[in-house]
Image (cartoon, one colour):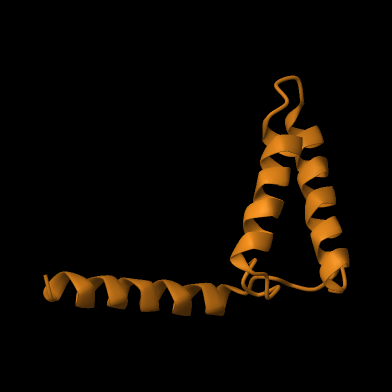
Length: 81
């Protein structure tokens, strides 16, 4: 998803740290509150990148293709060891 937003490794790292801090660090949040905070974090990232909020960031077909490529790469690497 972050790759689809064309984010650098540094941007992803910084934004992921923010998500961890704001969404997962507080102990006293209900699941719905965490979901709302995560949504807000993602919307902020998308707005900053100039991506419309309603843009689909993941599509099932692409996920499947990516997973097959990763598996194929892993097999190739393991065969050469």
